[in-house]
Image (cartoon, rainbow, N blue to C red):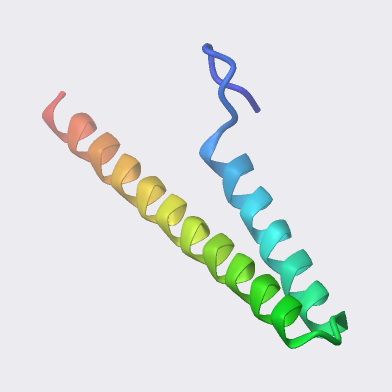
Length: 72
């Protein structure tokens, strides 16, 4: 789903971050070089962080929507 300005939805972004995190964790497990393992783990952690921030955004948007409905 894409909004009116062509930006991907928050849900799509969350799915993308979950996929990225899983992919990077898999790469870390498959890597034999310690430096590569650390790099993939950092990337996986960044994806997890972004996923959590997107979840926070969804919660905030839902709360704002509920408040707007309560005031209408």
